[in-house]
Length: 173
Image (cartoon, rainbow, N blue to C red):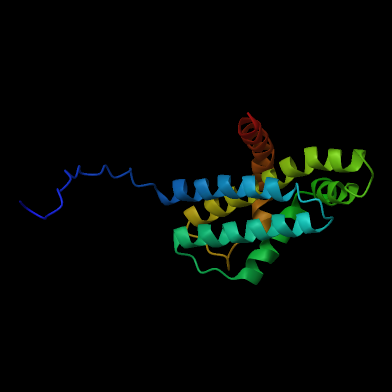
């Protein structure tokens, strides 16, 4: 009688299709948009904004790796700030306002819980999309010009609001 363990029949594994750099980066953008939306739910005033910006910087880092672009954290933070400021005072002020509203009894946290996650996810989505667009054209963090991306960023922000709202509704169901 043999003491060897029976060998299993090993089926060849099916390799998933290889994703393009753009597809990989879009997956990261979607993931971090949802992380940012979750950051908007943090009940501590200001910490929510810090979490959202941290998610965006981490996303840019990972997208940079996909494209083989050198990443500099300080540069990424500066670019994120410039992009958000480029949306205008209303979206920028809205995020800060919703964060600050958490201090108001009952109504404040409810309003902030509804609005800030969508705005945070949309800003992160727009950030990811403009960096993908820039990296796809051969750009780097050093030659990224936020002012040249302003129109595209605003368009992606609006697109992102719909995508994040849809994704959060699907996750809730």
